[in-house]
Length: 113
Length: 115
Picture 1 (cartoon, rainbow over the protein chains, first blue to last red):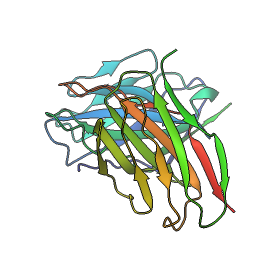
Picture 2 (picture 1 turned 180 degrees about the vertical axis):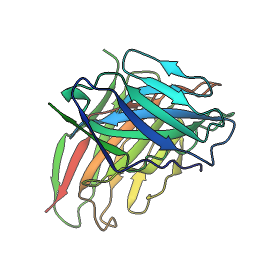
Picture 3 (picture 1 turned 90 degrees about the vertical axis):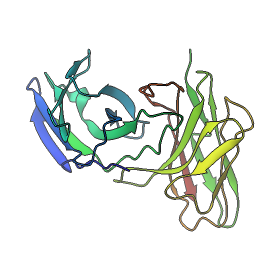
């Protein structure tokens, strides 16, 4: 399975942009890049996903490198509620298999007031 | 509202006892997953099921068992063979689709403590 690498932790100040990087050098052509985040004692929640083009939604933006070996989750204005663990995972879109979805340790984001 | 319901939220068990965690979804999703999370760690896949009456082992299946008799239900049994069962257990589901881009929906988790 293709794996991802993320920094263990990052810090930001409130109302500043945050760029969370993810490396996935062994990504295959059929892998989608998904981001989830997890608040303490809760299940993860979906943030955004993409394949090749940059994506935007109400929560965040996803910038995908041209070679797809890395991506960056962008929170445009961090709030205290954005403090969470952020996971970058790869999902194989192919055929009849959903694939084993592997979550790494993620990046712990701390947001300072 | 549609979603995933896990129960119980908290569970205490004595060593040597089996315990079953419930996971029910009303999202009409085909695929369901069980993850384990230890303090300060990421999620590790225990079992997953893509269709009724079929399931596959994940990365840490030893000491666990599952069943998938109904589309909406995917219970997890933590057996006495699981050496370190104290953990936070998360159930998730996703819809089946040719593009397979759907998001995972997670339950709120079940926290199991072995006394």
